[in-house]
Image 1 (spheres, rainbow, N blue to C red):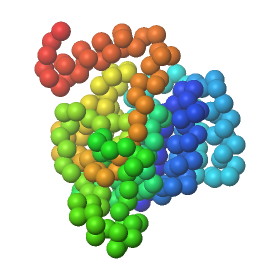
Image 2: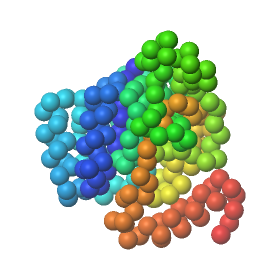
Image 3: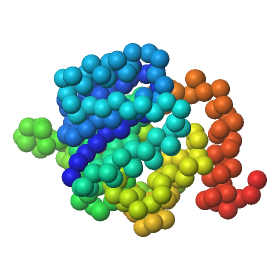
Image 4: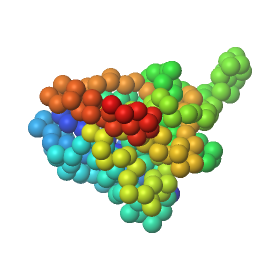
Length: 242
């Protein structure tokens, strides 16, 4: 079984570089895919140079692709392997604690879930893996416990850092409906998984820090795309005609 982290990005080297370094050095990943969505900053050059030191890192040209088009491409590529893949779909503007993806992947598989997402209630900077603490110290923290998976419904997706069981979508034409451009694709992913019998979990104890909306500024069609996606989602999942 492989664990692969995939990161779509556009001109966010100040976020991408620390995230990639963290994944390569402080997590247990087999590959890291950086989807270059048309970067004009130093992102592509940095990834190429970093790959000279670690062949697990790959740069994928995705110029002109929409966000959810990239997500679907990530799922398709993950399913080209002859083994199951824990595929992490990551925003570029996040920070994660050590072993976040490996912990999420393990708990997702152990619980038979198809999607695992981070705990939105705690910061990645202070998310601890308690097994690394001194056992004597742990006695004074009676409410502290190891990270654990908690069943979660798809109505409010936490999608800036998720791990999916990629093979769950292997025989599907897409993981996210291709009609979505900018908004509601994460809702579609979660609801589509749930509708097909795939359960979802939050991994409590694995937090994150998320800047949020960091890529909106470059998109002059943002509002138009959100309005279009809202209509599609309301019709597709809520049965509302607009």
